Each structure stands twice: as C-alpha cells, then as structure tokens.
Length: 337
Image 1 (cartoon, one colour):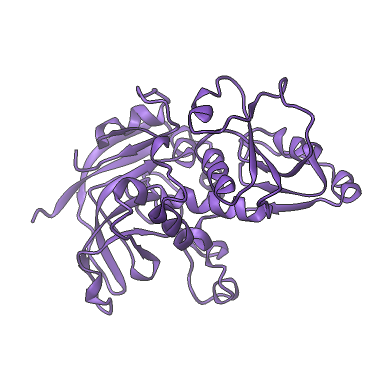
Image 2: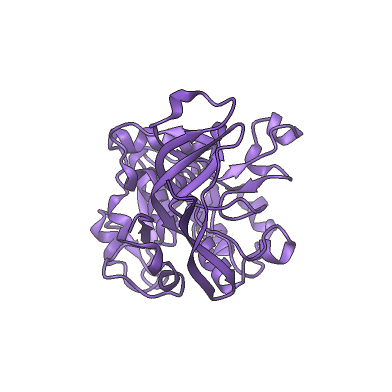
C-alpha cells in the first residue's frame, strides 16, 4: 500500500490544490476510514474566502484539510479499538471534545472549550481526502439502508433534526423555515415528518423546494398573514433573526441555526412581550443516531438535495461558487475519482 494519498489542501484564501500527503496512521483509540463521500458545506466556503471566524480567533490556521460531512469504511484500527470496527461502514461526529471537562461530562462535548472539529478546528484533518483518521468513539455505524450518499448527509441532517425538534412543532402546528438551503430544506423535511404544516420562505426561485413537495413556498412579498407556531432561521442574513421574532405567534418558538457574517440583532422586548422561546442550535452531535434511523426508515429522504458528485480536483471550483448542472444545494465529493 502506498505511503501517500491524495487530499484537497487549502493553503490560504482562494489558494488550494490536490496534493500527495502522508496516509494517516491508526494511533491508539483511533481508526482510519477510506472515504467514499464527503459533502461541501457553507463552512468550507467561509474557509475558502478567509471569512471564517475561527481563522481570526486562532482556532484554525492554513494550511488545512477541509471536509466534515462524510461516510466511508473502516480499514484500520489502533491500539485499544474493538477490531469489530474493521470493515464497518460508518460516518462520524464532527465535534471531538476532550471528554474530561465539565461540558463533556454533562454530555455536551460539542461545546467543549478544547474541542477539535474534523476538517474545521484544532488541526484535525478533514475528509476531502482518500483516507481520514478519527477517534473510534466518534463513529456511528451505518445500516445497509443508508448508503454512502445518505451517510454523508447525516451530519447536516443531524443539525436539521435538532432544529426541527427544538421548534416543538407537530400535528396541528404551522412552522415557517427561513432559507431553502441544505439545512433549511432538511429542517423542513424533518418538520414534515413530524406532522407539522410546513412553509418555506426564500428569495429568488423556489421551484426546487416545490419539487420536494413543499407547496407552501413564499417570498417576503408573497408571504400570507398566517399564525406561525414556530419559525426556524436557517439563513445567513443578518436581518433574519429579527424577522423570525416578528413572524412567530405569541407563545411560539424561534430556532436559530443559520449564522450571519456580521452581527445580527433582535429586540428582546418583543421576545418578552410575545412570550417567545428562542433556541440556538450548534452541531449535529446529539442528533446523529436519530438522523441515521430516520434515513434508514425512509421517513426523511434527502437524496434530491445532492446536485452532483465530483472528484477532488473539482473542489476548488465548487468552493469558488461555480454551479453544477443539478438543481440541489449540496455537492458531494468522491475522493476516489
């Protein structure tokens, strides 16, 4: 077996290439995975442009290897790892807490102060490569019904599942999702699966969302005056958090999962006077297992979100905003190409 592999390396804002790098070793407590699919995310784009906050906080530095939405097969295990993982099809948690701090001990390892994030933070190399090394404890086994395409959609799906659950919406409730991107549409899918009446608000063409079966799609100008029991902000617009509070019913819930590139503002007087509950969602970690179950059962089918699958050599163009032929918001990478 070769001692090197191909990986996508980002060396600075807008500077990237596919390089031959050393194959990762399965050190104690870790496994090596042959990557079959990896998704490109808005976070990756922010690293490509240099706008990602972690770069300015010192949590991330160039050069770096992106990729935190992935699926593959375990091909090597380190000391202390159950050999039963060998040959298993898996995906993995992005957030790698130190497992010793108070937050980790309380089950909130995704908020650990010292956490690494695969392909994002703390120098932990990501999955835009032929192979990936991760701690065995971060793995989630994939059943036969969840192939590599679905497996690489578990991480964004876990975020969306948590956002949908945070609304508390179900049968008899009306929920509005702001932003028909990957997370917004996944959230809409989980809300629909929970029995809520789902509406989607966006800008520009909403034909893709309608094609997924969401008939109630609106722009700000066409949005009807309806009572929304829950509103999810899955946009990156600085004005959306305040809009969510404006549109939600008194005693309703607003969920924030989108992040703006500049500070956003809400008037907490409106929260109080409307008796609104506001929830922020960071990370898929607590929702990964349930997302796998939802995909395996067919309760949620995110496959149409994937517009195209390309090789490592095309990652730079994708990050630069070049569109693929497909209509979906997500692009997958097959590092074997």
